Length: 469
Image (cartoon, rainbow, N blue to C red; front, side):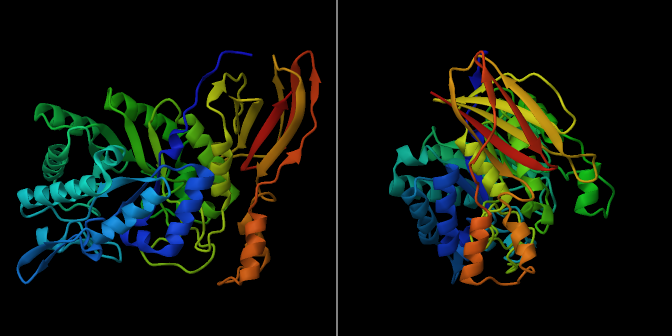
């Protein structure tokens, strides 16, 4: 068997959520616990931990009141299930804000602080509190990211220079607690400002431990006013891989964390609920290997309310789980990825829509496959013929599929008549329909080589597991 290379599970480093107050909900906590257990996620990132609805800093009778109780409830829970915080430091407490501009229905303030020293004090007191409460050893495993997408006027009314000052004061505050705590940015949309951020930090001796940014396949594709399908149709196959590679070059020797990405940037995109998302996720993650230290999908749950909280069981939300906790095909893609070993082998061959990866795991060889294309791009059912050489005696082969008729709760919901609410029995039925099934697969084994034929319908994902004696 050919020499392998490392396949660290970088996609499990962090997972996204909506905003901080959701983390106080019992159903959110239940779903995150499941994701940690079944998918291996280690950190969670969300907006608004500094916003007034968390009570972190408020003005009461002209007196600043710092209250970290709600943040502690979130962090206590995360540590109780073995997870940590990827702390996005946003949005601006009203008492520190320089204006009234807000984002989302929960009105996160997006203006620079009117007093950067007061901003520094807030960050320093919060981080010091966390170190005192949880211990330096624990908090050293956290990540501190300053703001969210400051290159977009939707999230930041200040200039680029204003953001760099915001970052500088926050980084100073964090490093004053302990120099080993990890802080980074620029947390931009569309891979932006990375060179400028590094140049600013290095010129002004501002510490930064990592580079963070975001991207989506809908970014800057299509024409103004295009819908999501048109944007995706105008995108390019593997464009996210191209962007990841370019970002790694710009980041130099610093670790790179994509703290948001998804199959599209639309929070009501039906493709999020379909097998299309599973194939796109699998292909995109496997193409990002070797380039990034973290790749945080947005989001783990449809318990989400940037615009409003939708109660429709499948409404095209970002989540891997719907509001009832039913796994979508995207969730099952992460489940297949979690099963993978950490040694990947070279693969020969090329196809316009099919991608294949071979991974070694103790006693197993795994063949991961996708048949994936962007909407309105050519794709059809393919018969994949694969030979894997230099194997010990093969005991068994089985396949797990995600496609129109496998691990697809959305299709079953459509067959139910797309009910707007679910009974407990319907939830059970849909959970069952979402499950990954291990099915035996025919194979030919001779002269220490295995020959397999696998049929993949459009937008399908499959994991073939070969067990050796």
